[in-house]
Length: 140
Image (cartoon, rainbow, N blue to C red; front, side, top):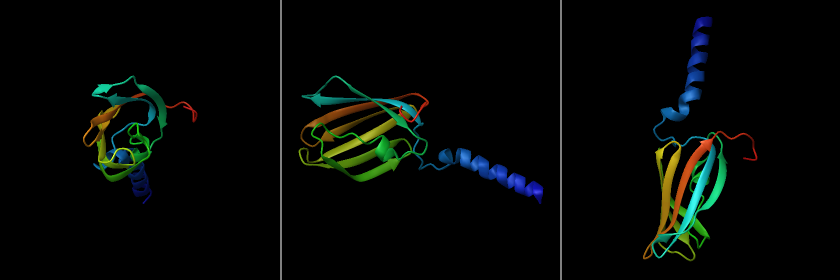
């Protein structure tokens, strides 16, 4: 009986440790300190990057963490969100940019690229994220 309890505890512990990777619907991005570069595109040319640093917690909501940027016009509401293990896609309802859509695609658990496209204007925002290290404090 005691042996069964120990085995069950080990199984539960292993599932808890690896549970995030067992479900194919789980999002495949690593927690840690991320450098996010956002570039606004004007007349087909990407501008200088705006660099943002963000500490991503284990189990963070990918919609809040990796899909938090919008076109330069701002004031947009995400709709029609689709999530896969390595990608997010969504539409944006914006006051100044009707017909906008966005995506984030991870080529690894430590790197992604994405963009916002506006109907009739093409790509208006580019984003790239790179994980640098573990977070060392809540202020990271």
